Image (cartoon, rainbow, N blue to C red):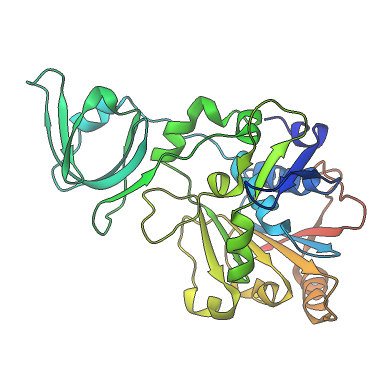
Length: 311
């Protein structure tokens, strides 16, 4: 997906699969912001990029920015499943993808003497030719199985279909979103699509792939703002954090990851968090031009600033 793709199409949101989608001029730019921040962050060096976005209401803003980050993620390069299985040791954890499921569990053995070749892992025996992608992972607690997420129009637009199985087997898992838990859960059920496209829309859940109790794969960790302090420090693989709302943005100075995006809600009469961000920029920050460095302009009604600080 080029940096101009999202801005060039008209995106539409539907609150659920049962409701009709509505286009709006602010949807595409918020998705584009996440994508352009993702690309810019790869060349930042040892500094933290801080983006503050002030919106009239913060509905869907954080998850749309998160979608942009995921859509611009780099695909992993994984050898063919048989090659991966040949070098695995019994007891190693792995994640595998077939036509219907994503499976994580412990590797037991590979039987190439049988035809077709079979592998034993996650408590079952699998025909190797039925596996679309497989990757070693960090140690896990017990086997897990999840349905293989479906692709929608936005994911096709971003080219994720070309490496979808590899992304499911070895996701970057480098995004965290902090906010009001009940709101974020509701927004995950929305659909994001392309207006007048013949492909079905993408569910926001399938793009962000949240980590949940029985998830076999995930891309995004969600944390409630009310208890976020107990979750610090964030896992080392997290590269971007979206702070959804003034309360979540108050944690800005506590977070040490390469990218922090703060979504500030102007419908709430609380300027303390915005003042803290401006003070951080004025005392420790080096300005980043959103227009020139990120090639991004906020939509009507949205204000934004960017800067970097030393990590």
